[in-house]
Length: 316
Image 1 (cartoon, helix red, strand yellow):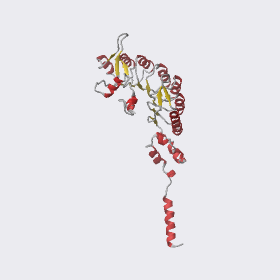
Image 2 (cartoon, one colour):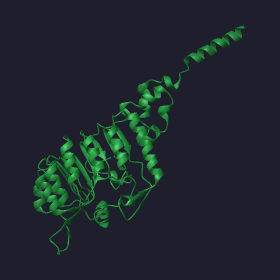
Image 3 (spheres, helix red, strand yellow):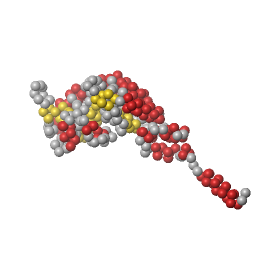
Image 4 (cartoon, helix red, strand yellow):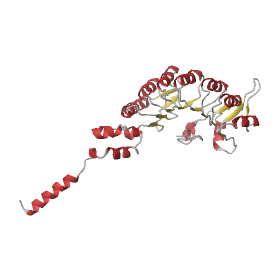
């Protein structure tokens, strides 16, 4: 062999020796990189590259929160229950993402966030609940396709649940009682929709130790507000920002919009650590709540606006 060939061979051997394969990348570094990926990137096939990448994809650091707030159903509204028809492809996409995510997460998810226009079915909710036994926070604003039995079954599996963001429902006792019976550490509730005396009395009866309540951007009956202030003695934070506050006297007397909180309410609320309000005519969110008659049509406004909350622990 010539000197030149010998030198070239040594150089090639040296270059080969310093080349590192992707699968040899330190797991901690790989997990750090994967933390910058969204849920669709994580479930797109990265875990199938090799065994070391799959191991990294299952790291608990990646799965504290399953954030599906960018995934929306393709749906049309219909006149009969469940009042929405969801396109089959949307359902298949959600099912696929849930299956891959929940398989990779290994039961480590503690926070689960669904989009305001993501209509989950009973089967999808049950499948998720069975694989998220440690869940502490649930953001599930759309319940059109979820039956009473479905949500109650899920709540019974989520004994560590502390925080819930939900829509207004016509018959709250079945749900609130289920939470009271199964979720000992439950302390935080956000209701996205009209809040009446029935809902308020249900909270006072079943969740008297509730600490944080947000009713922002909703129709709020004045007597329901008073009932909350009187009945929830452990309440620390109450958010009624941008609410359409209504006085509802006995029919046939008409309902009346209240534009300023009276002294009675302010005195009752003075014991709270935080009482968050906004009833300004110049406030765009207050105007929107009024224009939408206390049930905000979030789809009409900026994408992601529904995630906002003046209570930091409830904002997304």
